[in-house]
Length: 267
Image 1 (cartoon, rainbow, N blue to C red):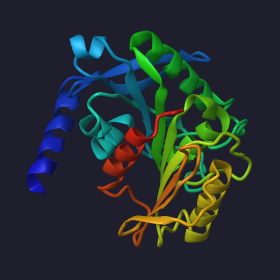
Image 2: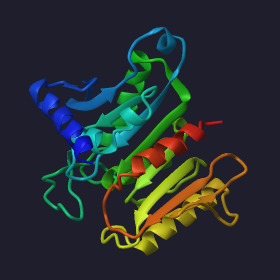
Image 3: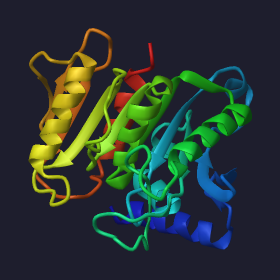
């Protein structure tokens, strides 16, 4: 355990010493409504095998108060699926229930959210368009995931941009009441029984909504000690991991999400 944390500390130090580069990650920029937006992007090393195939694409959104750099360290999808393009976007200062002044970085959670002019939905559109120009993206393998506020934004993307996504990963987040899911998409949901921000009743309600839109209404099947899988005829299952803890991103969450994404392209 200590050696693994030392590796991540060294990676963080490398970012501080060389702005714009984080391990093999590169900071990319887009201008959205006159505002410069950034994301930390990891891509497979160039080579004949990469040039000859289309690449999966993962968007991973940090929680409220986080950054693209902390998300890259904590989620590390680039180490779990090195064949994919992995994008850690950077949020802007955003008001929330726990940050009424908007002093911390975050994401909108519903379309038309007051004062935000759908800035993050536009940012997603700009990133996707730019990344498609930069890389040979597999359009059947575009994924969104996130933690907390970032998970809520991933739910928003499912509701508002669901046609471009293959699957969604949600950790300690929920669907805004004003949003409605209309496109079935495979989803893995991770939450804690003792999460003070996302109560268990809210978590279970979202899982039920996910199952309804995905046609995953049959009885769940155990898929691990704290996992239940609800299959669907359209390969849009719902996988639910409910752990006994609170509001955090468990160390096993990223491997579970990665494994789920690999199994579920858009058909």
